[in-house]
Image 1 (spheres, rainbow, N blue to C red):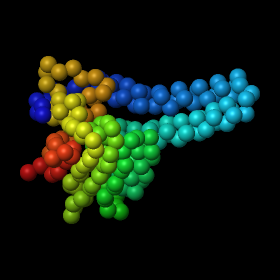
Image 2 (image 1 turned 60 degrees about the horizontal axis):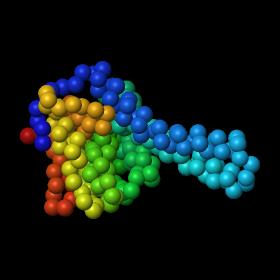
Image 3 (image 1 turned 120 degrees about the horizontal axis):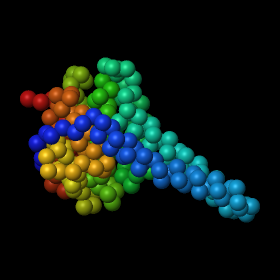
Length: 217
């Protein structure tokens, strides 16, 4: 895994992450638009029922993705703020309703620094990417002192693997590697971990994918 840290400019990273969020929500928003067009142009009761079902499901999906993005990429809360892990779990579970994998959340009932929540949710995205055919994902947050927790995500599923973008960019960007909107997310994950003084690594554990961030020695 690359460990050469050729940092991306704040402007470039912001643009890439905005592209990532737009990519994630454009599909459900487009489905809402299609459903509204059916309601406007079609009087068939069955088609209108199908359109309303499409609009309802797509609106819920878009809302879940935006709520997730707000915590994973945004500036939720003030500087130094803490977030409730119960709220983070609810946001993660909302996102997983539109994914092929099942989420198992293991964390105490507590509040932790918002950037640790940001890191955990970004690690979850990498865990999802590691099992594109679906499976089970366990996200754990542990530690006697939750001011410096250990965060891990284990993905179990058919053909689990370390995603190429994670392999290339979690440790930073090599000068000869091109960073696009897809790769910006694992790059950002590594950046957040380093800011928190956590050592982060992604690897295979037998047939399972594991990404872990823990206090640096």
